[in-house]
Amino acid sequence: MAKFTKEEFIEGLKEMSILEVKELVDAMKEEFGVDPSAVAVAAAPAAAAADEGPSTVTVTLTSAGPNKLPVIKLIKEVTGLGLKEAKDLADNGGAIKENIPSSEADELKAKLEEAGASVEVK
Image 1: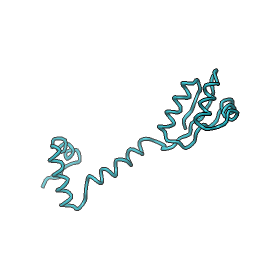
Image 2: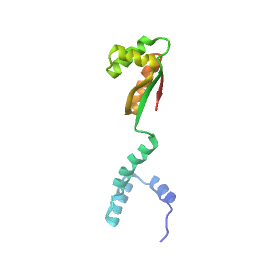
Image 3: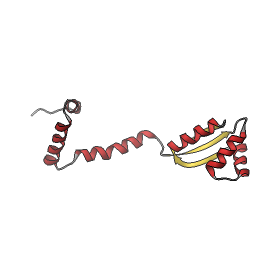
């Protein structure tokens, strides 16, 4: 029996219909006692997480910019700080939110930059 390389096997799969692939998966389950689709599903999230980088980040204000008022209002809204604390954060810079998902950090960064602030995401 001829041995297939991984590339040859994948090229063969590309030429199959969905029904043929399903029949192949069923045959592999029966022959080897393993569900290859479960392995593929379990491996996909792990690979995706490795490619994304850190899962949580910190949004840090480096400068409030020339017009601080909109930045102060946004900091107050996002953090729940009082007016004085939000103003101090706008004046001195620092971490606005820590250990948040990177998607949330990107949204927050966009809002702050729109208000005129300079922001870093680490």
